[in-house]
Image: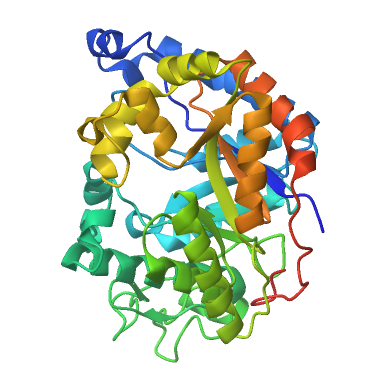
Length: 415
Protein backbone atom coordinates (compact mmCIF):
# COMPACT_ATOMS: atom_id res chain seq x y z
CA UNK A 1 0.00 0.00 0.00
CA UNK A 2 1.01 3.61 -0.58
CA UNK A 3 0.16 7.08 0.69
CA UNK A 4 -2.31 9.08 -1.40
CA UNK A 5 -0.82 11.87 -3.50
CA UNK A 6 -2.06 15.30 -2.40
CA UNK A 7 -2.86 18.10 -4.84
CA UNK A 8 -3.48 21.61 -3.52
CA UNK A 9 -6.17 23.23 -5.68
CA UNK A 10 -6.91 26.96 -5.30
CA UNK A 11 -9.03 29.38 -7.34
CA UNK A 12 -8.71 32.15 -5.82
CA UNK A 13 -11.81 33.74 -4.22
CA UNK A 14 -11.31 37.44 -3.58
CA UNK A 15 -12.21 38.21 0.04
CA UNK A 16 -15.06 40.25 1.47
CA UNK A 17 -16.37 40.39 5.04
CA UNK A 18 -19.79 39.20 3.90
CA UNK A 19 -22.12 39.21 0.92
CA UNK A 20 -23.20 42.77 1.69
CA UNK A 21 -19.61 44.03 1.39
CA UNK A 22 -19.13 42.04 -1.82
CA UNK A 23 -22.14 43.87 -3.24
CA UNK A 24 -21.01 47.28 -2.00
CA UNK A 25 -17.58 46.82 -3.63
CA UNK A 26 -18.85 45.41 -6.91
CA UNK A 27 -17.30 44.40 -9.18
CA UNK A 28 -14.81 43.13 -6.60
CA UNK A 29 -12.73 41.16 -9.10
CA UNK A 30 -11.85 44.41 -10.86
CA UNK A 31 -10.06 45.66 -7.74
CA UNK A 32 -6.52 45.53 -9.09
CA UNK A 33 -4.78 46.21 -5.78
CA UNK A 34 -6.72 43.45 -4.04
CA UNK A 35 -6.05 40.93 -6.80
CA UNK A 36 -2.35 41.85 -6.79
CA UNK A 37 -2.05 41.08 -3.08
CA UNK A 38 -4.03 37.85 -3.39
CA UNK A 39 -1.89 36.74 -6.34
CA UNK A 40 1.44 37.27 -4.59
CA UNK A 41 0.30 35.81 -1.26
CA UNK A 42 -0.86 32.79 -3.25
CA UNK A 43 2.76 32.13 -4.21
CA UNK A 44 3.62 31.90 -0.50
CA UNK A 45 1.04 29.13 -0.16
CA UNK A 46 2.40 27.30 -3.21
CA UNK A 47 5.95 27.40 -1.84
CA UNK A 48 4.79 26.25 1.60
CA UNK A 49 2.85 23.37 0.05
CA UNK A 50 5.93 22.36 -1.95
CA UNK A 51 8.00 22.31 1.23
CA UNK A 52 5.38 20.08 2.90
CA UNK A 53 5.71 17.47 0.17
CA UNK A 54 2.44 17.75 -1.74
CA UNK A 55 2.38 15.83 -5.01
CA UNK A 56 1.01 18.79 -6.97
CA UNK A 57 -0.30 22.35 -6.94
CA UNK A 58 -2.99 23.43 -9.36
CA UNK A 59 -5.67 25.93 -10.26
CA UNK A 60 -8.70 26.17 -12.53
CA UNK A 61 -9.88 27.84 -15.70
CA UNK A 62 -12.84 30.14 -15.08
CA UNK A 63 -13.49 33.52 -16.68
CA UNK A 64 -15.54 36.67 -16.06
CA UNK A 65 -16.09 36.19 -12.33
CA UNK A 66 -16.77 39.85 -11.60
CA UNK A 67 -18.17 38.96 -8.16
CA UNK A 68 -14.75 37.56 -7.25
CA UNK A 69 -15.71 33.95 -6.55
CA UNK A 70 -13.45 32.00 -8.94
CA UNK A 71 -10.92 34.35 -10.51
CA UNK A 72 -8.91 31.92 -12.63
CA UNK A 73 -8.74 33.09 -16.25
CA UNK A 74 -5.29 31.77 -17.19
CA UNK A 75 -3.93 28.68 -15.44
CA UNK A 76 -0.97 28.37 -17.79
CA UNK A 77 0.50 31.74 -16.82
CA UNK A 78 0.21 30.85 -13.13
CA UNK A 79 1.77 27.45 -13.71
CA UNK A 80 4.76 28.99 -15.49
CA UNK A 81 5.25 31.49 -12.66
CA UNK A 82 5.04 28.83 -9.96
CA UNK A 83 7.52 26.65 -11.83
CA UNK A 84 10.26 29.19 -11.12
CA UNK A 85 9.67 28.80 -7.37
CA UNK A 86 8.68 25.17 -6.82
CA UNK A 87 11.42 22.60 -6.26
CA UNK A 88 9.63 19.24 -6.08
CA UNK A 89 5.87 19.48 -6.51
CA UNK A 90 4.20 18.90 -9.85
CA UNK A 91 2.31 21.81 -11.37
CA UNK A 92 -0.90 21.78 -13.36
CA UNK A 93 -4.49 22.83 -13.84
CA UNK A 94 -7.79 21.08 -13.09
CA UNK A 95 -8.44 21.98 -15.74
CA UNK A 96 -8.66 23.43 -19.26
CA UNK A 97 -12.29 23.71 -20.45
CA UNK A 98 -11.80 22.08 -23.82
CA UNK A 99 -15.18 22.92 -25.37
CA UNK A 100 -14.18 26.60 -25.19
CA UNK A 101 -10.48 26.11 -26.02
CA UNK A 102 -8.51 25.68 -29.21
CA UNK A 103 -6.85 22.25 -28.83
CA UNK A 104 -3.77 23.27 -30.79
CA UNK A 105 -3.13 26.20 -28.45
CA UNK A 106 -3.67 23.99 -25.39
CA UNK A 107 -1.23 21.42 -26.79
CA UNK A 108 1.38 24.12 -27.42
CA UNK A 109 0.98 25.81 -24.04
CA UNK A 110 1.00 22.61 -22.01
CA UNK A 111 4.00 21.21 -23.89
CA UNK A 112 5.96 24.37 -23.06
CA UNK A 113 4.89 24.07 -19.42
CA UNK A 114 6.04 20.47 -19.45
CA UNK A 115 9.48 21.62 -20.59
CA UNK A 116 9.63 24.50 -18.09
CA UNK A 117 8.92 22.06 -15.25
CA UNK A 118 11.17 19.35 -16.76
CA UNK A 119 8.38 16.80 -16.71
CA UNK A 120 6.61 17.86 -13.52
CA UNK A 121 3.51 19.10 -15.32
CA UNK A 122 0.05 17.49 -15.31
CA UNK A 123 -2.86 18.52 -17.49
CA UNK A 124 -6.49 18.61 -16.43
CA UNK A 125 -9.44 18.80 -18.82
CA UNK A 126 -13.05 19.73 -18.13
CA UNK A 127 -16.29 20.16 -20.06
CA UNK A 128 -17.48 23.55 -18.79
CA UNK A 129 -20.64 24.19 -16.79
CA UNK A 130 -20.73 27.99 -16.43
CA UNK A 131 -22.78 29.47 -19.26
CA UNK A 132 -21.76 33.09 -18.62
CA UNK A 133 -18.34 32.43 -20.06
CA UNK A 134 -18.46 29.00 -21.76
CA UNK A 135 -21.20 30.11 -24.14
CA UNK A 136 -19.28 33.29 -25.02
CA UNK A 137 -15.79 31.82 -25.41
CA UNK A 138 -17.23 28.73 -27.09
CA UNK A 139 -19.40 30.64 -29.57
CA UNK A 140 -17.32 29.75 -32.62
CA UNK A 141 -18.45 26.14 -32.36
CA UNK A 142 -21.79 26.98 -30.72
CA UNK A 143 -20.49 25.26 -27.61
CA UNK A 144 -22.63 25.85 -24.54
CA UNK A 145 -22.19 25.02 -20.88
CA UNK A 146 -23.59 21.80 -19.51
CA UNK A 147 -25.09 21.31 -16.06
CA UNK A 148 -26.11 18.19 -14.16
CA UNK A 149 -29.84 18.94 -14.59
CA UNK A 150 -29.45 18.66 -18.40
CA UNK A 151 -27.73 15.25 -18.60
CA UNK A 152 -28.66 13.69 -21.93
CA UNK A 153 -30.19 16.91 -23.23
CA UNK A 154 -29.26 18.58 -26.52
CA UNK A 155 -26.75 20.99 -24.98
CA UNK A 156 -25.19 18.23 -22.89
CA UNK A 157 -24.73 15.98 -25.92
CA UNK A 158 -23.20 18.76 -28.03
CA UNK A 159 -20.87 19.84 -25.25
CA UNK A 160 -19.72 16.24 -24.75
CA UNK A 161 -19.12 15.73 -28.47
CA UNK A 162 -16.99 18.87 -28.69
CA UNK A 163 -15.13 18.01 -25.50
CA UNK A 164 -14.29 14.46 -26.55
CA UNK A 165 -13.29 15.53 -30.06
CA UNK A 166 -10.97 18.23 -28.75
CA UNK A 167 -9.42 16.06 -26.07
CA UNK A 168 -8.72 13.49 -28.78
CA UNK A 169 -7.11 16.26 -30.82
CA UNK A 170 -5.00 17.31 -27.85
CA UNK A 171 -3.59 13.79 -27.61
CA UNK A 172 -2.88 13.72 -31.36
CA UNK A 173 -1.14 17.11 -31.22
CA UNK A 174 1.07 15.88 -28.38
CA UNK A 175 1.97 12.52 -29.91
CA UNK A 176 1.91 12.76 -33.73
CA UNK A 177 4.49 14.56 -35.85
CA UNK A 178 1.87 15.54 -38.44
CA UNK A 179 -1.79 15.92 -37.58
CA UNK A 180 -4.86 15.76 -39.78
CA UNK A 181 -8.39 15.99 -38.35
CA UNK A 182 -11.75 15.79 -40.08
CA UNK A 183 -13.95 16.26 -37.08
CA UNK A 184 -17.53 17.34 -36.64
CA UNK A 185 -16.44 20.62 -35.02
CA UNK A 186 -12.82 21.16 -36.08
CA UNK A 187 -10.78 20.50 -39.20
CA UNK A 188 -7.06 20.33 -39.86
CA UNK A 189 -6.35 21.65 -42.43
CA UNK A 190 -9.14 24.14 -42.98
CA UNK A 191 -10.87 23.80 -45.29
CA UNK A 192 -10.17 20.09 -45.12
CA UNK A 193 -11.20 19.25 -48.67
CA UNK A 194 -8.74 21.53 -50.45
CA UNK A 195 -6.13 22.09 -47.78
CA UNK A 196 -4.64 25.52 -47.15
CA UNK A 197 -3.70 26.89 -50.55
CA UNK A 198 -1.32 29.72 -51.31
CA UNK A 199 1.17 29.22 -48.46
CA UNK A 200 4.24 31.01 -49.89
CA UNK A 201 6.90 28.92 -48.15
CA UNK A 202 5.38 25.54 -49.06
CA UNK A 203 8.57 24.29 -50.70
CA UNK A 204 10.58 24.87 -47.54
CA UNK A 205 7.89 23.24 -45.38
CA UNK A 206 7.71 20.21 -47.66
CA UNK A 207 11.48 19.77 -47.64
CA UNK A 208 12.20 20.45 -43.95
CA UNK A 209 8.85 20.11 -42.17
CA UNK A 210 7.10 16.97 -41.03
CA UNK A 211 6.41 14.38 -43.74
CA UNK A 212 2.91 14.81 -45.13
CA UNK A 213 2.44 18.45 -44.10
CA UNK A 214 2.52 19.67 -47.71
CA UNK A 215 0.72 17.88 -50.51
CA UNK A 216 1.89 17.40 -54.08
CA UNK A 217 -0.04 20.51 -55.11
CA UNK A 218 1.74 22.66 -52.49
CA UNK A 219 -1.32 22.91 -50.22
CA UNK A 220 -1.03 22.43 -46.47
CA UNK A 221 -2.51 18.99 -45.75
CA UNK A 222 -1.36 18.40 -42.17
CA UNK A 223 0.22 20.45 -39.39
CA UNK A 224 3.00 19.69 -36.95
CA UNK A 225 2.27 21.05 -33.47
CA UNK A 226 5.45 22.14 -31.71
CA UNK A 227 7.03 21.72 -29.29
CA UNK A 228 6.60 18.09 -28.39
CA UNK A 229 6.05 17.55 -24.61
CA UNK A 230 8.99 16.84 -22.35
CA UNK A 231 7.29 13.72 -20.98
CA UNK A 232 6.90 10.84 -23.40
CA UNK A 233 4.42 10.56 -24.91
CA UNK A 234 2.64 13.32 -22.93
CA UNK A 235 1.85 14.57 -19.40
CA UNK A 236 -0.64 12.69 -17.21
CA UNK A 237 -4.23 13.79 -17.83
CA UNK A 238 -6.84 14.46 -15.14
CA UNK A 239 -10.54 14.90 -15.92
CA UNK A 240 -13.05 16.77 -13.77
CA UNK A 241 -16.31 14.86 -13.20
CA UNK A 242 -19.37 15.43 -11.06
CA UNK A 243 -22.58 13.80 -12.31
CA UNK A 244 -22.04 12.05 -15.64
CA UNK A 245 -21.37 8.32 -15.98
CA UNK A 246 -20.38 8.93 -19.61
CA UNK A 247 -17.55 11.15 -18.39
CA UNK A 248 -16.32 8.26 -16.22
CA UNK A 249 -16.42 5.88 -19.17
CA UNK A 250 -14.45 8.31 -21.34
CA UNK A 251 -11.83 8.78 -18.63
CA UNK A 252 -11.52 5.04 -18.02
CA UNK A 253 -11.08 4.15 -21.70
CA UNK A 254 -8.30 6.70 -22.03
CA UNK A 255 -6.58 6.02 -18.71
CA UNK A 256 -7.29 9.57 -17.51
CA UNK A 257 -7.51 10.33 -13.80
CA UNK A 258 -11.07 11.35 -12.84
CA UNK A 259 -11.35 14.08 -10.20
CA UNK A 260 -14.56 13.52 -8.24
CA UNK A 261 -16.34 16.76 -7.34
CA UNK A 262 -19.15 14.77 -5.77
CA UNK A 263 -20.34 13.26 -2.52
CA UNK A 264 -19.10 9.90 -1.29
CA UNK A 265 -22.01 7.75 -2.45
CA UNK A 266 -21.75 8.96 -6.05
CA UNK A 267 -17.96 8.78 -5.94
CA UNK A 268 -18.12 5.17 -4.78
CA UNK A 269 -20.52 4.33 -7.60
CA UNK A 270 -18.32 6.07 -10.17
CA UNK A 271 -15.11 4.54 -8.84
CA UNK A 272 -16.42 1.02 -9.41
CA UNK A 273 -17.70 2.01 -12.85
CA UNK A 274 -14.27 3.43 -13.67
CA UNK A 275 -12.52 0.19 -12.74
CA UNK A 276 -15.05 -1.87 -14.71
CA UNK A 277 -14.75 0.26 -17.84
CA UNK A 278 -10.97 0.46 -17.59
CA UNK A 279 -10.67 -3.31 -17.20
CA UNK A 280 -12.91 -3.84 -20.23
CA UNK A 281 -10.60 -1.54 -22.19
CA UNK A 282 -7.63 -3.67 -21.16
CA UNK A 283 -6.35 -1.50 -18.31
CA UNK A 284 -6.07 -3.63 -15.13
CA UNK A 285 -6.60 -0.80 -12.65
CA UNK A 286 -7.59 -1.55 -9.08
CA UNK A 287 -10.21 0.29 -7.03
CA UNK A 288 -8.84 3.75 -6.25
CA UNK A 289 -6.03 3.62 -8.79
CA UNK A 290 -5.79 6.72 -11.02
CA UNK A 291 -8.74 8.23 -9.15
CA UNK A 292 -8.89 11.51 -7.25
CA UNK A 293 -11.23 12.58 -4.46
CA UNK A 294 -11.78 16.33 -4.13
CA UNK A 295 -12.77 17.87 -0.80
CA UNK A 296 -12.96 21.24 0.95
CA UNK A 297 -11.57 20.85 4.46
CA UNK A 298 -11.13 22.68 7.76
CA UNK A 299 -9.76 21.59 11.12
CA UNK A 300 -10.86 23.21 14.38
CA UNK A 301 -10.56 22.73 18.12
CA UNK A 302 -14.34 22.41 18.53
CA UNK A 303 -17.43 21.80 16.43
CA UNK A 304 -18.51 25.36 17.13
CA UNK A 305 -15.23 26.72 15.75
CA UNK A 306 -15.65 24.58 12.63
CA UNK A 307 -19.12 26.05 12.09
CA UNK A 308 -17.69 29.54 12.42
CA UNK A 309 -14.99 28.79 9.83
CA UNK A 310 -17.64 27.59 7.40
CA UNK A 311 -19.65 30.74 8.07
CA UNK A 312 -16.71 33.13 7.52
CA UNK A 313 -14.96 31.43 4.63
CA UNK A 314 -17.38 29.17 2.76
CA UNK A 315 -20.98 30.27 3.28
CA UNK A 316 -20.94 33.14 0.77
CA UNK A 317 -19.75 31.12 -2.23
CA UNK A 318 -21.79 28.05 -1.26
CA UNK A 319 -25.01 29.98 -0.82
CA UNK A 320 -24.69 32.37 -3.74
CA UNK A 321 -22.75 30.34 -6.31
CA UNK A 322 -22.57 26.58 -5.72
CA UNK A 323 -26.23 25.98 -4.84
CA UNK A 324 -27.62 27.77 -7.93
CA UNK A 325 -25.43 25.58 -10.16
CA UNK A 326 -25.78 22.27 -8.33
CA UNK A 327 -29.36 21.46 -7.29
CA UNK A 328 -28.14 18.25 -5.64
CA UNK A 329 -26.62 20.38 -2.86
CA UNK A 330 -28.87 21.06 0.14
CA UNK A 331 -30.25 24.61 0.28
CA UNK A 332 -32.72 26.56 2.36
CA UNK A 333 -35.50 24.39 0.93
CA UNK A 334 -34.07 21.49 2.91
CA UNK A 335 -35.42 23.09 6.07
CA UNK A 336 -32.03 23.20 7.77
CA UNK A 337 -29.71 26.06 8.54
CA UNK A 338 -27.12 26.98 5.93
CA UNK A 339 -24.12 25.71 7.89
CA UNK A 340 -25.72 22.29 8.24
CA UNK A 341 -26.52 22.40 4.53
CA UNK A 342 -22.81 22.88 3.76
CA UNK A 343 -21.94 19.90 5.94
CA UNK A 344 -24.62 17.79 4.26
CA UNK A 345 -23.43 18.66 0.74
CA UNK A 346 -20.92 15.82 0.91
CA UNK A 347 -18.01 17.84 -0.48
CA UNK A 348 -16.85 19.37 2.81
CA UNK A 349 -14.90 17.35 5.37
CA UNK A 350 -13.97 18.96 8.65
CA UNK A 351 -14.42 19.45 12.35
CA UNK A 352 -11.97 18.59 15.10
CA UNK A 353 -8.81 16.71 14.19
CA UNK A 354 -10.41 13.49 15.39
CA UNK A 355 -13.49 14.11 13.24
CA UNK A 356 -11.35 14.98 10.22
CA UNK A 357 -9.33 11.77 10.56
CA UNK A 358 -12.49 9.74 11.06
CA UNK A 359 -14.13 11.27 7.98
CA UNK A 360 -11.13 10.59 5.75
CA UNK A 361 -10.63 7.05 7.03
CA UNK A 362 -14.31 6.36 6.32
CA UNK A 363 -13.89 7.74 2.79
CA UNK A 364 -10.84 5.58 2.16
CA UNK A 365 -12.55 2.46 3.42
CA UNK A 366 -14.92 2.90 0.50
CA UNK A 367 -12.75 4.55 -2.17
CA UNK A 368 -8.97 4.37 -1.56
CA UNK A 369 -8.19 7.04 -4.15
CA UNK A 370 -4.64 7.41 -5.42
CA UNK A 371 -4.99 11.22 -5.38
CA UNK A 372 -6.55 13.80 -3.06
CA UNK A 373 -7.37 17.32 -4.28
CA UNK A 374 -7.78 19.73 -1.37
CA UNK A 375 -9.54 23.06 -1.83
CA UNK A 376 -9.70 26.10 0.41
CA UNK A 377 -11.59 29.23 -0.58
CA UNK A 378 -8.42 31.28 -0.51
CA UNK A 379 -8.25 34.30 -0.10
CA UNK A 380 -11.62 34.41 1.64
CA UNK A 381 -9.86 31.91 3.90
CA UNK A 382 -6.62 33.70 4.89
CA UNK A 383 -3.23 32.59 3.63
CA UNK A 384 -1.96 31.68 7.10
CA UNK A 385 -4.98 29.48 7.76
CA UNK A 386 -4.65 27.63 4.47
CA UNK A 387 -1.00 26.86 5.24
CA UNK A 388 -1.76 25.82 8.82
CA UNK A 389 -4.62 23.51 7.88
CA UNK A 390 -2.69 21.97 5.00
CA UNK A 391 0.18 21.21 7.38
CA UNK A 392 -2.24 19.55 9.81
CA UNK A 393 -3.61 17.42 6.98
CA UNK A 394 -0.17 16.41 5.70
CA UNK A 395 1.23 15.54 9.13
CA UNK A 396 -1.78 14.36 11.15
CA UNK A 397 -4.37 13.04 8.68
CA UNK A 398 -2.51 11.69 5.64
CA UNK A 399 -0.54 9.07 7.63
CA UNK A 400 -3.87 7.34 8.40
CA UNK A 401 -4.71 6.83 4.70
CA UNK A 402 -3.60 4.13 2.28
CA UNK A 403 -4.14 3.52 -1.41
CA UNK A 404 -3.13 0.51 -3.55
CA UNK A 405 0.22 0.61 -5.29
CA UNK A 406 -0.32 1.44 -8.99
CA UNK A 407 -0.36 -1.60 -11.24
CA UNK A 408 2.38 -0.08 -13.41
CA UNK A 409 0.47 -0.50 -16.67
CA UNK A 410 0.70 2.33 -19.18
CA UNK A 411 -2.17 3.62 -21.32
CA UNK A 412 -1.03 5.16 -24.56
CA UNK A 413 2.47 5.02 -23.13
CA UNK A 414 1.55 7.05 -20.02
CA UNK A 415 1.97 5.49 -16.59
